[in-house]
Length: 188
Image (cartoon, rainbow, N blue to C red):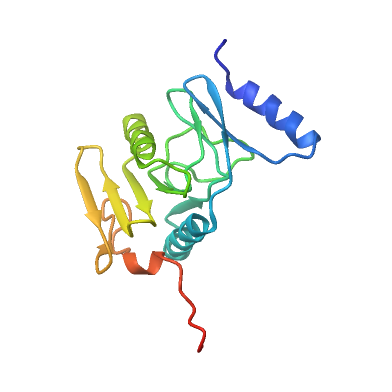
């Protein structure tokens, strides 16, 4: 099968859109990958992370925060849309109406119920190989957050820990326990 390109992704997205379908596509090593919807826990965790990040970044005008619909064309020609991503303002002073042809500074992947942790870790490695400065893998099943850096260091955080990324966002802190969905008690 011939290798697919960004133009092929655009063509297929257009055909699907015209037919009333709204699928998210990624391009990985010349193959088009259809991304299914996340389960609601993964969605809520992604939104919580993005909200806390955006609430820190925006008033300080530090850069841009994107959700899972924001596509990035990486140097290896893959088209990826991390669950959450951040690009510093010096690297993207203005948003464009197309995929960004750059590597985000920070990417976050949140494990969905149907995801395999090994595949997500492989995806994190690709991000780092392409130039991402910080890659974060969040696993709602284990309530753990893994922080990866290009020097191959791994930091694992759990409840009671605070996530920081001083190399990108000095003074920003995220309490890991705040990522998980609230459980409402019947008496409330």
